Length: 118
Ligand code: TYC
Picture 1 (cartoon, rainbow, N blue to C red):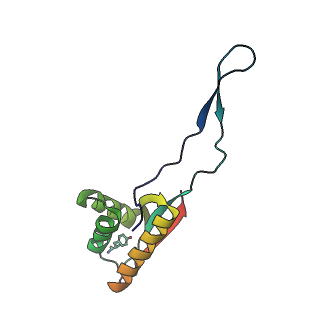
Picture 2 (picture 1 turned 90 degrees about the vertical axis):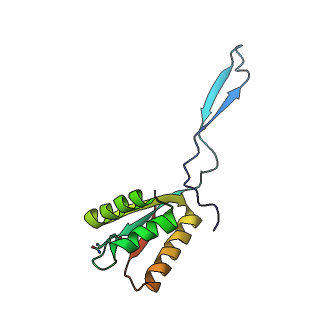
Picture 3 (picture 1 turned 90 degrees about the horizontal axis):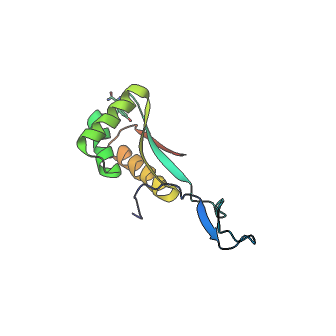
């Protein structure tokens, strides 16, 4: 798998401008010219059939959550209908969705996993 650390957007860049013509040093805050890469959250959806233990395993295996956090996220999904598993770059999020769906189908579970721009 490529880099799978969560990402956060780059802050605006402050560029020092040495001389403003009036003997003062000015720091200008500029908006970044190249757009930072968009980030995506991977979301699991609740259903009535996938075993809770399988969802906890998915959160541990594919989203590197410890048992306690995985259980909390699973219960949130169970009660609210959906829950965020992690936030990643576009290609890493897409890969995780595919891996989770493939594991769910192998296990015969209807678990749904989607990604959305964060
Ligand atoms: N609702 C499922 C059950 O009661 C458990 C479950 C949790 C299923 C999270 C999917 O994404 C899910 N067995």
